[in-house]
Length: 94
Image (cartoon, rainbow, N blue to C red; front, side, top):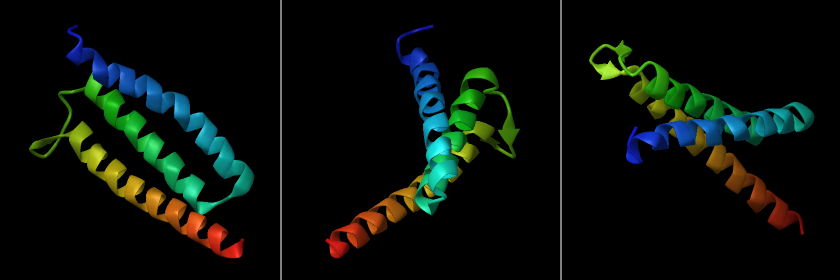
């Protein structure tokens, strides 16, 4: 495997490492922002898991890992939006 070919495996490991922490934070706090972040990391783990272990799977004409990545981007956008909202509300309270 070339150095560039190793990146999906590295990213899979990074995202899989972060997933349990954010799932735990969501479970403890029940804050939507942690739920969205947990969903984002779960989708990224699925995306890169598919890319590494099942790149031939397809959804119509598109590789399945690319379809999952689109949903991960959408989830990340929601997660970032809720994080920013949380920061703005916290700043106003000070």
